[in-house]
Length: 397
Image 1 (cartoon, rainbow, N blue to C red):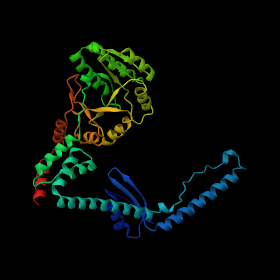
Image 2: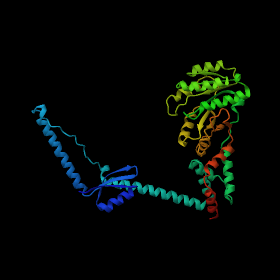
Image 3: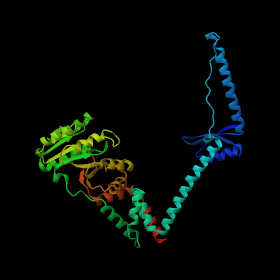
Image 4: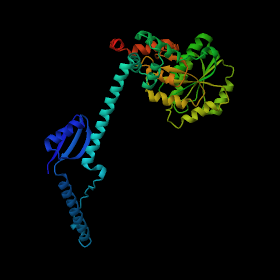
């Protein structure tokens, strides 16, 4: 029997090398992924080798039984150690030839899917070149393909790409309405909710500082329901001390209700909630604390513009259990694209209240402007001018 180990960048090349080196009758012993590609162990005359191996295992088992029987009458010092041999039962699904066939089928399926996708795209580009160019632009901006396709189909196609693009921008802006009432003007009780690390505490500080500058420190109070992290208390307390604003800690819905009653004369109460993952069981306690306080609370979902689309969707679905008044997008200065976050805002019908683009308090807090957000998304997604050239070429073709 001849056994060889082959390394290649992909399975197709590895199998080709096996066939060239060992011939068409070679059997695949094993396959595994490596840092540089794949590793394939192949052999000739596999059935003979497997039979020899199984016979060797049976002989070793018989020898082990014999040694064990004799050890019952021999002194302990004369006992022979036995070596535990691994079993070599080959299941049908693990038979080398079947493994090779399954891998070939998988590779062919992937190749076929890629080719079909390319054919579909080429066909769309030929039949509706402007729509195809719009779709490509939106995907490059970070918008999910399904949403991009939906918007591209709604465009009334004319004779030029610029008109279609202008329609698309207007439609995107219209799909992102602003919150009707400004938090700082409306007042009341406002809570910021959202996943961990999105910047809720810093955003609370920015809102509070802006309010103090416009209405004075005596008319506002800060409350935190984050009873899990002492550091969170201290951060918010530091901001409160700097601004001369009162700050309280609520541990549950009962204590929150008491605190809100005591602060009822304040025109604005900002509640900072715990930074807990949307999959954390303690999140239910936090939402229950807000919903069962006995007070009318406007909750705003804080989302980071740097988060992945799936994280943004999960957060939106989880916190939608609360009656959300709107959303606040943070970390715009750190984002390399905005399509992901804006796509979730549009898909989940969220109204944007504010955006933040830095750590400065309160300078880096701004009223949401859909037009500015879309323009920023376009600028971030416009890496090269070839998109426009391609669009015009498709249109002319």
